[in-house]
Length: 406
Image (cartoon, rainbow, N blue to C red; front, side):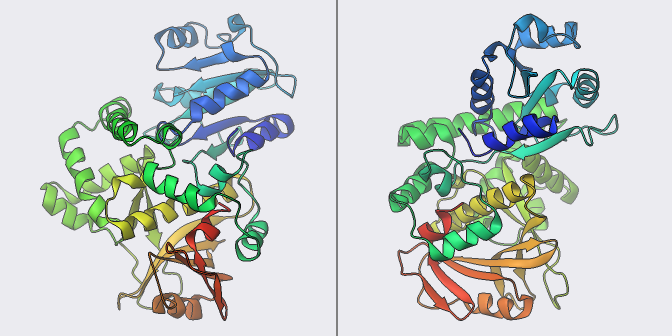
């Protein structure tokens, strides 16, 4: 069971809306969807748009394709159906709207996709009010350590655990495993360097050679692959699109469009600078991170990317579960003072997080921005195994203690 499973089942039972499940390629969406079908004896109710037989069945009988499958009922008494990669159907939003409006009382619909389920679908009918979106991320340390995989807790419970509880057993070994094999299930649980290398090649091919071809009109595949070779050395720093444009010899808007597309395909994600009510703050250049942080060889940026993936999952989960309106940013001013991450709640500073491989003192920029932004929490996360320390309102924490609860 993955951490989103209880929320999806609760949605089906209590709200009777369809669930949209999005996330990176090979993160476990199909496995999760099939496990939800197995629970109710409805394994035949799995339909994948990439499968020729399934696609023909949907197109031939769009209002009754699931009836011949003979699937079982969910906890709500309705028939549970999974539609995988349906966003590749050019009219998928109209199709889902019609299906839900006519048969929503009969079906528990789970729609999964490796795009953001809004990619290049302009106009048409809105699905507003008919679904809840859940984002499935790679395994984080907290989820890896829990037998039930249920690692999403409300914000207050999270901070109480981070600052007061002893991390679970196996936390140090778990962090080493994550750093080595990524949070993607196949290489993570295989624990093989050879399989990791093969998996990375396949993962790259699926996104760049297939998803870009199927979901966009982009044809400069070679240039995008060149872009991806330039990004690892820029992880952790404000990203200059103009510099990339010069290196690739293409237009500024072209590079920007490629980065947005890669974000929509869950290959990478961007965090924007926070500048609200801050004098001389950096406002334009974002920072990008990979969902697969093993793409990065340099230890410092790789560790920062690992923490970024954990925080991205935490913020998305808190939003998806309805715990608040959270966003992930970073802060930097024109004097080049910078703190790696700032979590906001309702656009107000909530938690500052700085990452370090090793440290002997609190980072000066973290102190500086804490004094000016006054967030509820300020944490320096250190990869080196140190003892947790409190310095006034700021904390120095070893990485395993902070990440163990995400």
